[in-house]
Amino acid sequence: LQSWQLAAKRLLAAAYSPRYLLATNCATAGSLFVLADCAAQRIETLAGGSSAIRAHDWRRSGRLGLIGLIGAVPAHYWYLTLDRRLPGRTPGTMLAKILLDQAVFGVCFNLAFFTALPLMEGRSWRDSLYYCRDKFPTALAVEACVWPAAQAVNFYWLPTRLRLFFVTGLAAVWDVFLSWYSHRSPPVEE
Image (cartoon, rainbow, N blue to C red; front, side):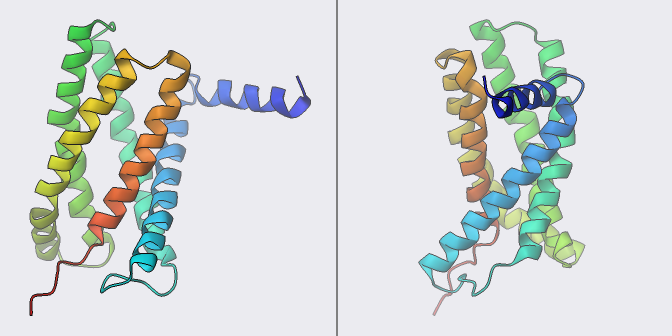
């Protein structure tokens, strides 16, 4: 192997070791949210319309990156708890993990996301709660259609070496959706 290949192999081994896993999760989630928001803003610009932006809003990307960074901490401990309480990879155990993940973490993360984002933009608590009320149900319904099926594919059909890439790629696509949907303006009634 080349020296850069050895260095990359060592970096990946360290990043995904239990010792540094929380830091890796935070860096990955924060980075994915920033990149996803960049993609969402580009999509909005290309689509035009009332939500189109003229220049890239780096503050918006930063807010979403911060949400990803902060949200990675409870997610990290949630998944460690799931693995400790429901050990093994039997079909029943994996189904229980998927259902608990959607029923508990999916709901909590979406509530926190759609409440925190307006607060970070300087809106009032009241506006934030109304915003969450308007955005939360649709996002949760879409999540319930996407993630359980994706987790089933990931756990049951993919080889172990591809699971991380699959989940990371899907998370990136999901984050683009969250960024786009959270900044999407309602249609203007005439």
